[in-house]
Structure formats: structure tokens, C-alpha cells
Image (cartoon, rainbow, N blue to C red; front, side):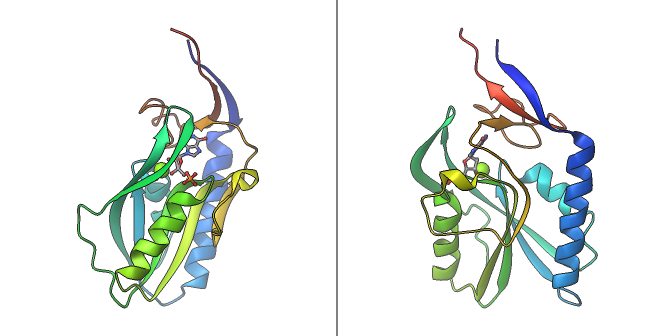
Length: 174
Ligand code: IMP
Ligand code: MG
């Protein structure tokens, strides 16, 4: 059986996400925010974040995948199923976690090569000690140690995304 121990409570998540949403609202005052949420992990964070943003928003989705079990595969697979039109736009990428940074680095390159004017990044979590790619978030709710975490949209082989809190996972045997 997997073991999950509480790292950040539902209450603390709510408080911090609201704070970051208010900061984003202030920074983008009077502007429409073009959000690109990275599926699947960021859907819970995105849903909470946008409900505390006061600006007009345009919500979009892209898919990126790199993790298998609790290890980064190193290869980032981007699939733009909705064929986003980002030409000349400033976008705000919303992601669950920045770990090695490869996913966000590749996403940034992808959007710039698609003609994006500027790319900003909002993450729920940051594991700074794991970074290998040259990328950093503009907005971050929590920095955490190098532990594999689940809940609040983050999964372990598709499990545990629905947990309302963030927990540290210790995978069990079969
Ligand atoms: P990066 O490309 O190494 O920065 O990895 C980012 C992606 O890895 C995130 O979008 C997550 O899907 C996944 N990831 C990294 N750390 C964790 C974790 O602790 N739990 C669940 N997923 C993680
Ligand atoms: Mg992800």
C-alpha cells in the first residue's frame, strides 16, 4: 500500500493560491490574461487560481508529459490538441510543479517558436534543488524539498489527483 503524509493542508493551499491570484490580478491590472494550463496536473490549480483573478481571462489548455512513476523521463512530450493561436500574444503558463524545469523550458520554446510575444509562468510548486534547465517561475505558491508529492492535481501514475491537500508519497510494494 502507498503511504501519503500531509505536507500542505487544504486551508494553507487555499490561502496561498488566493494571495498569488491577487498578485497576478494587480500585475495585469486592466489587461486580459491569456492563460495556458498544462494538462493534466495543473487543472486543479488553474480552476482555483482563475476564480480569484479579477481580470478578463482567456483559458486554454495544452498537454505535456514527462514523468513515469516517480522519475522524470527526461523527454517532454507536448501535444497541442487545441491548436492554440498564440501569435503576438503574451501568455501566462499555469503548471502544477517545476522540477528539473525541462517541461517549462520546452513549453516556452514551443510558444516562442509559435510566435508568442512573451511568456510568463505561474506554478503551484517549485522544487528548486532539482533544476537543470535555465527557467524560473514568475509566480510560485510554494517551494518544496526534493520529495515526490501527490494531490491537488498531481498524480502518481494517474492516482491521487483528487486529494484536496498535498502529500508526500512513499510508494508501497505490490
Ligand atoms: P520537469 O520537466 O522536470 O520540471 O517536470 C515537471 C513535471 O513533472 C510536472 O509537470 C509534473 O507532471 C511532474 N512532476 C515533477 N515532480 C512531481 C511530483 O513530486 N509529483 C508529481 N508529479 C511531479
Ligand atoms: Mg505536469
